[in-house]
Length: 410
Length: 117
Image (cartoon, rainbow over all chains, first blue to last red; front, side):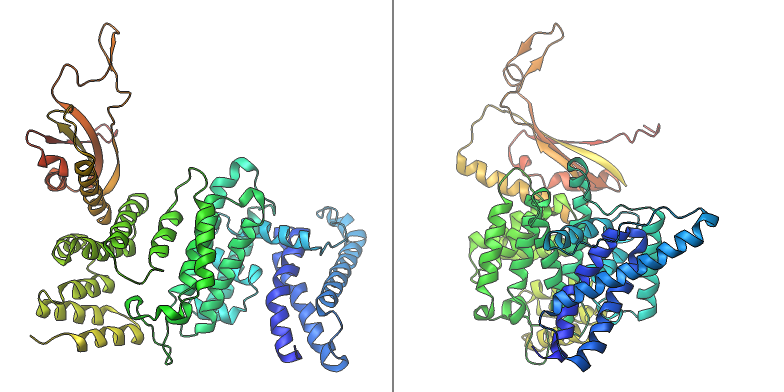
C-alpha cells in the first residue's frame, strides 16, 4: 500500500484502538487527552513518513510513538505533581506509565469504551457521535455529514457529552454480570441506531453511509467476541445487520438513486452476508430470549427470498404483529399493513391503513397510493401527490414521480 | 388516554375445535391484536389456558378447572389504550371470539390508582 492510501487506512483501524487503550488507561475524564495523543501520533507519522519513508511495520511504529507521547505526558504531569501539586493538593497519583497495546487489551478497551459511551446520562445522539469519533475513527466533518448538520453542532455535542461523562465519573469497565443485561440493551440500541443512520441516512455521500453500517457491524461483532456479551439479542442484531447489508450493492442505480426492494436485482445481493446472517440468527435462537432484533432479523431473512409466496407473507405479517406488541413504531405499523395487503388482500389492508392515522408521515400516503392502485386509481394518484408533497429529499420526490408516471390513467 | 380490559367470555369452553379451526382462530386473533398494536393502542394481554386451571372455593376446596360447573369461561384478555369507552368498544367488535354464538367480550375501564375511580 502506498502512502496516500496507507495513512487513511491505518487511521481507520488504529486511531480507535490507540484512543480506546489510552482512554481506559487515563480514565474517562481524559477522553480528549486520549484523542489528542492519538491524533498527534498520526500527525507525526505523516511528517516523518513523507521524508523518511514508510517503516517496516507501520502499526508497531504508531504504537511506539503513542506510548512515548503518553510517557511524555506523564513526565510533564509528574513534574507538575512534584512541583505544583503539593501546593494544590488536588491531584491523585498519576496512573502507571506502562501502556499496554496488546491485542487483548485493545479489544477489551474498545468493548469497555463502548459500554462507557452508551451511558444513560448522555443523549442517544451524543452516544452515537462519540462512538463514531472514538470507536470508529470518524472525523468531525464526516460525523456532521452523517447527521446532516454542521461541524460546530457536532463539536458542541461531543464536548458536552465528554463533560457529562467526566461529571458522572463513568468507569471504563464491563458492568458485572447482573447489570450487564440492562446496560447491554442501551449499547444495542446505540449500535442499531448507528446502523440505521447509515442504512436510512439522507446523506448523499454513499461511502460514508456504508462505512457507518460496517462500523456498527464491527462493534456488534466485538460484543460477540466476549463470552459475557455474546447473548442471543446481540446475535440477532448482527443477523439483522448482515441481511440488510447483503442488499447494499442492489439498492442504488448508477446515478446514486435508491432502488426500491421490489425493483432490486437479487443477483446483486451478497449471498455470503446472507449465509452469515442465517448463522447468527441460528445462534440467536439458542435459549428463551425473544427480542425485537429476533423479529426484525427474521423479517429481514424472509426478504432475502425474492419470490412472493403466501407462506412468506403470512410469516412476515405475524412477525410484525408480534413486533408491534413488543415495540410500536410508525415504520413497523406501515410495514405490517403492507404485509397484510400481501397476505390478506388490498381491501383488508386499506381498511387497516386508514386506522393508522399517520397523517404527517409521507410513507403513510405512499403506502395508501400503492394500496389503492388498481382499486381506485384516482385515490391512488391523490395519495401519491400528498406523499410527494410531504417528502423532503429530491430522491424521494423522484421515486414518487416515477410511481405517478406508471399509474394507469383510467 | 385510558386503559380498558377486553375480556373474552366463551359460552362453552368444553367444545373442542379441530386443529385447523384453532389455527384459523389463532391467526385471526393475532391479526386483530396486531391491528390494535399498529395503532399504538395495545398495552398487553394474554390467553388464559384451561390446562392446569383450578377453582378455589370459599371453603378452600379446590376443583379441577372452572368449566365443570359453569357454562361460561374466560378465555383471555387484552388491554388496550383508548380515548373513550366507545373506542374500546370499537376494538372489541373486531375480536374473533365474537364469531362464536353466545360468546361475549366484556369492556372494563382499568382503574388508574389515582383516586378517581
